Length: 327
Image 1 (cartoon, rainbow, N blue to C red):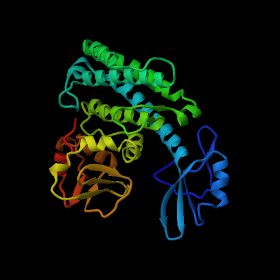
Image 2: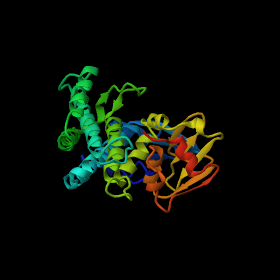
Image 3: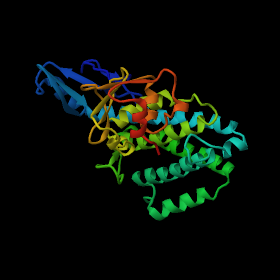
Image 4: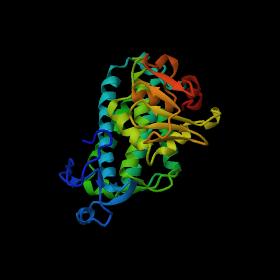
Protein backbone atom coordinates (compact mmCIF):
# COMPACT_ATOMS: atom_id res chain seq x y z
CA UNK A 1 0.00 0.00 0.00
CA UNK A 2 2.02 2.98 1.24
CA UNK A 3 5.77 2.78 0.63
CA UNK A 4 7.93 5.06 2.74
CA UNK A 5 6.35 8.48 3.30
CA UNK A 6 4.53 9.56 0.13
CA UNK A 7 3.53 13.16 -0.38
CA UNK A 8 0.42 13.26 -2.57
CA UNK A 9 -1.98 15.98 -3.57
CA UNK A 10 -5.39 15.91 -1.96
CA UNK A 11 -6.82 15.51 -5.46
CA UNK A 12 -5.02 12.18 -5.91
CA UNK A 13 -6.87 10.08 -3.41
CA UNK A 14 -5.82 6.48 -2.94
CA UNK A 15 -8.01 3.48 -2.21
CA UNK A 16 -7.67 1.48 0.99
CA UNK A 17 -8.21 -2.31 1.25
CA UNK A 18 -11.68 -1.48 2.53
CA UNK A 19 -12.55 0.53 -0.58
CA UNK A 20 -12.50 3.87 1.25
CA UNK A 21 -10.87 6.81 -0.46
CA UNK A 22 -8.24 8.44 1.68
CA UNK A 23 -5.22 10.70 1.58
CA UNK A 24 -2.02 9.89 3.43
CA UNK A 25 -0.36 13.29 3.24
CA UNK A 26 -1.64 16.40 1.52
CA UNK A 27 0.27 19.60 0.70
CA UNK A 28 -1.55 22.81 -0.06
CA UNK A 29 -0.12 26.05 -1.52
CA UNK A 30 -3.08 27.84 0.05
CA UNK A 31 -4.05 28.72 3.64
CA UNK A 32 -5.81 26.11 5.75
CA UNK A 33 -9.14 27.74 4.98
CA UNK A 34 -8.99 26.40 1.41
CA UNK A 35 -12.09 24.65 0.18
CA UNK A 36 -10.03 21.54 -0.58
CA UNK A 37 -9.40 20.46 3.03
CA UNK A 38 -12.88 21.56 4.03
CA UNK A 39 -14.40 19.36 1.35
CA UNK A 40 -12.22 16.47 2.42
CA UNK A 41 -13.10 17.00 6.07
CA UNK A 42 -16.77 16.82 5.11
CA UNK A 43 -16.06 13.33 3.83
CA UNK A 44 -14.71 12.30 7.21
CA UNK A 45 -10.98 12.83 6.63
CA UNK A 46 -9.34 14.42 9.68
CA UNK A 47 -6.25 16.61 9.44
CA UNK A 48 -3.69 18.14 11.74
CA UNK A 49 -1.28 20.95 10.95
CA UNK A 50 2.11 19.88 9.65
CA UNK A 51 5.27 21.86 9.05
CA UNK A 52 5.17 25.12 7.15
CA UNK A 53 7.88 25.81 4.62
CA UNK A 54 7.66 29.11 2.77
CA UNK A 55 4.10 29.51 1.55
CA UNK A 56 3.41 25.76 1.69
CA UNK A 57 1.42 24.52 4.65
CA UNK A 58 1.17 20.77 4.93
CA UNK A 59 -1.84 18.97 6.30
CA UNK A 60 -1.55 15.42 7.57
CA UNK A 61 -4.52 13.06 7.47
CA UNK A 62 -4.10 11.67 10.96
CA UNK A 63 -6.92 9.18 11.32
CA UNK A 64 -6.44 7.62 7.91
CA UNK A 65 -2.69 7.25 8.32
CA UNK A 66 -3.22 5.44 11.62
CA UNK A 67 -5.77 3.11 10.02
CA UNK A 68 -3.29 2.34 7.26
CA UNK A 69 -0.57 1.66 9.83
CA UNK A 70 -2.87 -0.67 11.75
CA UNK A 71 -3.59 -2.67 8.60
CA UNK A 72 0.08 -2.96 7.67
CA UNK A 73 1.00 -3.93 11.23
CA UNK A 74 -1.62 -6.67 11.34
CA UNK A 75 -0.44 -7.91 7.94
CA UNK A 76 3.11 -8.08 9.33
CA UNK A 77 1.86 -10.07 12.32
CA UNK A 78 0.24 -12.54 9.93
CA UNK A 79 3.53 -12.94 8.05
CA UNK A 80 5.42 -13.45 11.30
CA UNK A 81 2.96 -16.12 12.42
CA UNK A 82 3.03 -18.03 9.14
CA UNK A 83 6.84 -17.97 9.05
CA UNK A 84 7.10 -19.24 12.62
CA UNK A 85 4.67 -22.05 11.89
CA UNK A 86 7.08 -23.36 9.26
CA UNK A 87 10.11 -22.97 11.54
CA UNK A 88 8.42 -24.48 14.60
CA UNK A 89 7.38 -27.65 12.81
CA UNK A 90 10.94 -28.26 11.62
CA UNK A 91 12.59 -27.92 15.05
CA UNK A 92 14.00 -31.07 16.57
CA UNK A 93 13.62 -31.70 20.30
CA UNK A 94 17.27 -30.77 20.80
CA UNK A 95 16.82 -27.49 18.92
CA UNK A 96 13.65 -26.74 20.87
CA UNK A 97 15.45 -27.16 24.19
CA UNK A 98 18.62 -25.49 22.94
CA UNK A 99 19.71 -21.84 23.11
CA UNK A 100 17.89 -19.08 21.28
CA UNK A 101 18.91 -15.58 20.31
CA UNK A 102 17.69 -14.44 23.74
CA UNK A 103 20.71 -15.19 25.91
CA UNK A 104 18.80 -16.48 28.94
CA UNK A 105 16.05 -18.44 27.15
CA UNK A 106 15.83 -21.67 25.22
CA UNK A 107 13.85 -21.70 21.97
CA UNK A 108 10.94 -23.31 23.82
CA UNK A 109 11.02 -20.55 26.44
CA UNK A 110 10.78 -17.95 23.68
CA UNK A 111 7.69 -19.75 22.40
CA UNK A 112 6.34 -19.74 25.97
CA UNK A 113 6.92 -15.99 26.29
CA UNK A 114 5.20 -15.28 22.98
CA UNK A 115 2.38 -17.72 23.63
CA UNK A 116 1.54 -16.45 27.12
CA UNK A 117 1.80 -12.90 25.82
CA UNK A 118 -0.54 -13.75 22.99
CA UNK A 119 -3.08 -15.19 25.41
CA UNK A 120 -2.99 -12.07 27.60
CA UNK A 121 -3.05 -9.73 24.60
CA UNK A 122 -6.12 -11.46 23.17
CA UNK A 123 -7.90 -11.18 26.53
CA UNK A 124 -7.12 -7.43 26.55
CA UNK A 125 -8.40 -7.04 23.00
CA UNK A 126 -11.59 -8.92 23.77
CA UNK A 127 -12.16 -6.69 26.81
CA UNK A 128 -11.72 -3.55 24.70
CA UNK A 129 -14.32 -4.94 22.30
CA UNK A 130 -16.74 -5.57 25.16
CA UNK A 131 -16.40 -9.34 24.81
CA UNK A 132 -14.85 -10.19 28.16
CA UNK A 133 -13.31 -8.95 31.39
CA UNK A 134 -10.06 -7.03 31.29
CA UNK A 135 -7.17 -9.23 32.50
CA UNK A 136 -5.72 -8.18 35.84
CA UNK A 137 -2.54 -9.11 37.68
CA UNK A 138 -3.97 -12.36 39.01
CA UNK A 139 -5.03 -13.40 35.51
CA UNK A 140 -1.59 -12.65 34.10
CA UNK A 141 0.25 -14.48 36.87
CA UNK A 142 -1.95 -17.54 36.41
CA UNK A 143 -1.23 -17.54 32.67
CA UNK A 144 2.53 -17.25 33.19
CA UNK A 145 2.55 -20.04 35.79
CA UNK A 146 0.64 -22.37 33.49
CA UNK A 147 2.99 -21.72 30.59
CA UNK A 148 6.10 -22.09 32.77
CA UNK A 149 4.89 -25.54 33.80
CA UNK A 150 4.54 -26.76 30.20
CA UNK A 151 7.01 -29.11 28.55
CA UNK A 152 8.97 -27.64 25.61
CA UNK A 153 6.80 -29.32 22.99
CA UNK A 154 3.67 -28.02 24.72
CA UNK A 155 5.09 -24.49 24.75
CA UNK A 156 5.67 -24.68 21.00
CA UNK A 157 2.19 -26.05 20.30
CA UNK A 158 0.60 -23.57 22.68
CA UNK A 159 2.30 -20.63 20.98
CA UNK A 160 1.08 -21.73 17.55
CA UNK A 161 -2.49 -21.99 18.82
CA UNK A 162 -2.70 -18.79 20.86
CA UNK A 163 -0.81 -16.65 18.36
CA UNK A 164 -3.13 -17.92 15.61
CA UNK A 165 -6.18 -16.92 17.66
CA UNK A 166 -4.79 -13.44 18.29
CA UNK A 167 -3.82 -12.79 14.67
CA UNK A 168 -7.20 -14.01 13.43
CA UNK A 169 -8.97 -11.76 15.94
CA UNK A 170 -6.97 -8.74 14.78
CA UNK A 171 -7.71 -9.60 11.16
CA UNK A 172 -11.44 -9.80 11.96
CA UNK A 173 -11.65 -6.19 13.15
CA UNK A 174 -14.00 -4.10 11.06
CA UNK A 175 -12.82 -0.81 9.52
CA UNK A 176 -14.87 1.03 12.14
CA UNK A 177 -13.22 -0.89 14.96
CA UNK A 178 -9.74 -0.28 13.55
CA UNK A 179 -10.51 3.43 13.40
CA UNK A 180 -12.21 3.84 16.80
CA UNK A 181 -10.81 1.18 19.14
CA UNK A 182 -8.73 2.39 22.10
CA UNK A 183 -7.17 0.45 24.94
CA UNK A 184 -5.42 1.68 28.12
CA UNK A 185 -1.76 0.63 28.33
CA UNK A 186 -0.16 1.45 31.67
CA UNK A 187 3.16 2.81 30.42
CA UNK A 188 1.73 4.86 27.54
CA UNK A 189 0.64 8.46 28.11
CA UNK A 190 -2.65 7.96 26.27
CA UNK A 191 -4.91 5.00 25.42
CA UNK A 192 -3.52 2.91 22.56
CA UNK A 193 -5.17 2.96 19.17
CA UNK A 194 -5.63 -0.29 17.27
CA UNK A 195 -2.44 0.56 15.35
CA UNK A 196 -0.44 1.11 18.54
CA UNK A 197 -1.88 -1.99 20.22
CA UNK A 198 -0.95 -4.14 17.23
CA UNK A 199 2.45 -2.43 17.13
CA UNK A 200 3.21 -3.48 20.70
CA UNK A 201 2.56 -7.08 19.73
CA UNK A 202 4.58 -6.79 16.53
CA UNK A 203 7.57 -5.42 18.41
CA UNK A 204 7.49 -8.47 20.68
CA UNK A 205 6.89 -10.99 17.92
CA UNK A 206 9.40 -9.58 15.42
CA UNK A 207 12.26 -9.55 17.91
CA UNK A 208 11.49 -12.89 19.52
CA UNK A 209 10.77 -14.50 16.16
CA UNK A 210 14.33 -13.55 15.32
CA UNK A 211 15.43 -15.20 18.59
CA UNK A 212 13.92 -18.45 17.31
CA UNK A 213 15.08 -18.22 13.70
CA UNK A 214 18.66 -17.24 14.51
CA UNK A 215 19.03 -20.45 16.49
CA UNK A 216 19.06 -22.30 13.16
CA UNK A 217 20.32 -19.52 10.87
CA UNK A 218 22.95 -17.12 12.21
CA UNK A 219 22.37 -14.81 9.23
CA UNK A 220 18.67 -14.31 10.02
CA UNK A 221 17.29 -10.77 10.04
CA UNK A 222 13.99 -9.15 10.88
CA UNK A 223 11.29 -9.62 8.27
CA UNK A 224 10.99 -6.66 5.87
CA UNK A 225 7.30 -5.98 6.47
CA UNK A 226 7.86 -6.01 10.22
CA UNK A 227 10.87 -3.70 10.02
CA UNK A 228 8.97 -1.21 7.84
CA UNK A 229 6.02 -1.05 10.22
CA UNK A 230 8.23 -0.92 13.30
CA UNK A 231 10.22 2.07 12.08
CA UNK A 232 6.94 3.97 11.81
CA UNK A 233 5.59 2.68 15.12
CA UNK A 234 8.78 3.32 17.11
CA UNK A 235 9.20 6.84 15.75
CA UNK A 236 5.59 7.56 16.72
CA UNK A 237 3.36 6.47 19.58
CA UNK A 238 5.67 3.60 20.59
CA UNK A 239 8.76 5.76 20.87
CA UNK A 240 8.75 5.09 24.59
CA UNK A 241 10.01 1.57 23.84
CA UNK A 242 13.20 2.97 22.30
CA UNK A 243 13.64 5.12 25.39
CA UNK A 244 13.31 2.04 27.57
CA UNK A 245 15.83 0.12 25.46
CA UNK A 246 18.53 2.79 25.38
CA UNK A 247 21.08 3.85 28.00
CA UNK A 248 21.89 7.42 27.01
CA UNK A 249 24.38 7.79 29.84
CA UNK A 250 26.73 5.44 27.99
CA UNK A 251 27.57 8.25 25.53
CA UNK A 252 29.29 11.52 26.48
CA UNK A 253 28.13 13.64 23.53
CA UNK A 254 25.00 14.12 21.50
CA UNK A 255 24.60 11.62 18.64
CA UNK A 256 22.26 11.91 15.69
CA UNK A 257 22.68 8.61 13.88
CA UNK A 258 21.24 8.64 10.36
CA UNK A 259 19.91 5.20 9.46
CA UNK A 260 21.20 4.93 5.91
CA UNK A 261 18.92 6.73 3.47
CA UNK A 262 15.68 5.71 5.23
CA UNK A 263 15.00 9.23 6.53
CA UNK A 264 15.03 7.92 10.12
CA UNK A 265 17.59 8.70 12.79
CA UNK A 266 18.48 7.51 16.28
CA UNK A 267 19.05 10.46 18.60
CA UNK A 268 21.07 9.98 21.80
CA UNK A 269 21.09 12.99 24.09
CA UNK A 270 19.42 13.24 27.49
CA UNK A 271 17.47 10.21 26.38
CA UNK A 272 17.24 7.94 23.36
CA UNK A 273 14.66 8.20 20.58
CA UNK A 274 13.96 7.15 17.01
CA UNK A 275 13.03 10.10 14.82
CA UNK A 276 11.27 10.11 11.45
CA UNK A 277 13.69 12.74 10.16
CA UNK A 278 17.42 13.42 10.15
CA UNK A 279 18.28 16.79 11.66
CA UNK A 280 22.02 17.50 11.83
CA UNK A 281 23.43 13.99 11.53
CA UNK A 282 26.65 13.39 13.45
CA UNK A 283 27.01 9.74 12.44
CA UNK A 284 25.68 7.26 9.90
CA UNK A 285 24.58 3.65 10.18
CA UNK A 286 25.15 1.88 6.86
CA UNK A 287 23.56 -1.50 6.25
CA UNK A 288 20.13 -3.08 6.10
CA UNK A 289 17.54 -1.04 8.04
CA UNK A 290 16.42 -4.17 9.87
CA UNK A 291 19.91 -4.42 11.37
CA UNK A 292 19.49 -0.96 12.88
CA UNK A 293 16.32 -2.12 14.60
CA UNK A 294 18.11 -5.20 15.91
CA UNK A 295 20.81 -2.89 17.24
CA UNK A 296 18.20 -0.89 19.18
CA UNK A 297 16.90 -4.04 20.85
CA UNK A 298 20.28 -5.58 21.59
CA UNK A 299 20.29 -8.14 18.80
CA UNK A 300 23.28 -6.98 16.77
CA UNK A 301 26.13 -8.72 18.55
CA UNK A 302 29.29 -9.37 16.56
CA UNK A 303 28.17 -12.92 15.71
CA UNK A 304 24.95 -11.60 14.16
CA UNK A 305 26.21 -8.47 12.40
CA UNK A 306 26.15 -8.55 8.57
CA UNK A 307 29.46 -7.81 6.87
CA UNK A 308 28.06 -4.68 5.21
CA UNK A 309 27.11 -2.95 8.47
CA UNK A 310 29.32 0.02 9.32
CA UNK A 311 29.02 3.04 11.60
CA UNK A 312 30.90 6.26 10.88
CA UNK A 313 30.96 9.60 12.68
CA UNK A 314 31.15 10.55 16.34
CA UNK A 315 30.15 7.12 17.67
CA UNK A 316 31.26 3.54 17.03
CA UNK A 317 29.23 0.38 16.64
CA UNK A 318 30.67 -0.99 19.88
CA UNK A 319 29.60 2.17 21.71
CA UNK A 320 26.10 1.81 20.28
CA UNK A 321 25.98 -1.76 21.53
CA UNK A 322 26.66 -0.37 25.02
CA UNK A 323 23.79 2.10 24.61
CA UNK A 324 21.48 -0.76 23.56
CA UNK A 325 22.35 -3.79 25.73
CA UNK A 326 19.14 -5.65 24.89
CA UNK A 327 16.55 -7.43 26.98
